[in-house]
Length: 148
Image (cartoon, rainbow, N blue to C red):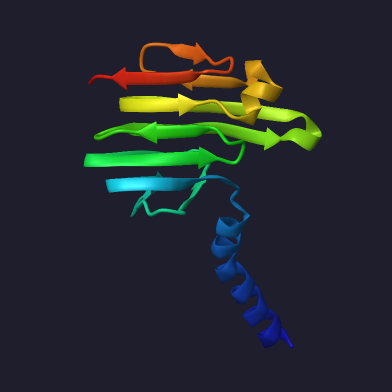
């Protein structure tokens, strides 16, 4: 009995990292891809592919040449141009609970941003961060270039 309980405990502990990955919330997807792009998550980097799920705190980098289009679950869209970096810092879209938050950080490169449902439902809940400023978004389209 002790042996089977020990084996069961080891099996549960070894499955914990996989269960934690499944529990991570998908906040959006890679919709378009041209050239190279990468998703950095929790210290690992993987190539971006169309349909790849994105999570809070992901860093998306495009190669040179490279471009990627992202759609978040609230229909916010962000397009990154060549040699760009974007961090998905904060994201909450729970309309039934009245919880909304969006904070993306444009680190370098070129970006096109179109607001989604979060801004329509809670205009004060969305922010676009750049190295020099924070932009409070109130339902608009932005085109931003950040030079190194």
